Length: 170
Image (cartoon, rainbow, N blue to C red):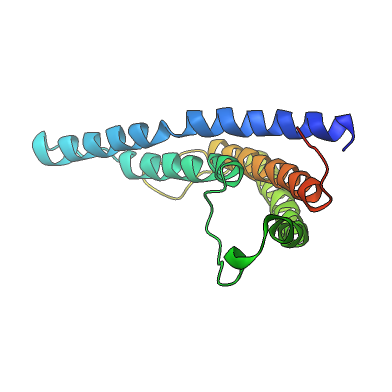
């Protein structure tokens, strides 16, 4: 494999690893928000209008920013009724072929996320709730998460391609 591809794979794997590890802590942020919701609503009887939406935003960030890490660590769901019976080279070949569909899907998703973020910024969009938060922060996280998944998918494509043709990638 060319050095540029080796560098790309190392760099994107590193970014996905660091982002994924940092994203893991969002679970504690979400737990804090939900405990705060319980305390303010049930113990001191002062319900906060922003709590549930903030928990949803944090969960969305956790889900989207963890996507690249999930792909990197191969922790995503795979329907392997017959896949598990194949040898590593055959698996890599199948993964290379299916990666084309995943990458195409993520490119389309990224274009839609970018378009949606542009619209949100141009119209100063807010949610139609009592809190009415701006939508651009979560749509920015969405765009970054999809971009990270796309870049990681391309990295995995290169790794599977190298495995298919017995080339060294690292």
